[in-house]
Image 1: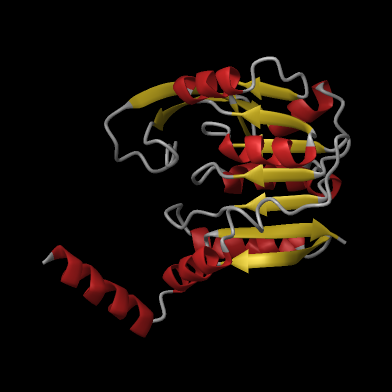
Image 2 (image 1 turned 90 degrees about the vertical axis):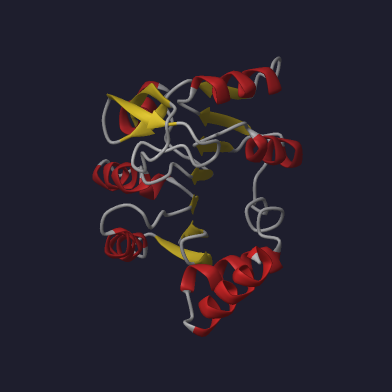
Length: 218
């Protein structure tokens, strides 16, 4: 019965033109996780930020392809430990057991694998995590240029990007790969506002509604 119910739900979503559902289907057809998210003009000298590193799979694919310098930010201790183990001995990959945000803060996160979030808190397992000001981190590390920044932080992207605009960091990023999340309050209007501001310095190279999009500096 569940099979037929799912078929009916899928048909309904197609008929009602669910933009996210349609975008997800297109993303899967494009094999975007193995193509679009990895195809960038990078080299061993490039600087890459992986904000929301989870278990380091994306960073591993980027490193294997380009051998670049990667900063991974993962606030959940269990996932961070997996990243440390995965990249043990790799000097050009640095992992941090905190996330990047608009300010230094402590927050509870609901731990749900790659959907772990400080915004969507419906799960049972929670963990107190550390977040650091993205501007302070870049200043301390003397980072003036980021070749690729990947942002997948389950609703935290709105605050993070606001801070990056405020401090002029957006203009220092050659490519910005973002996954927006629609469960955040007023997510659609906030996303549109961010996109309008991004147009001042970047242009879209791919766009899958609330799945993944990428902005390349003009």
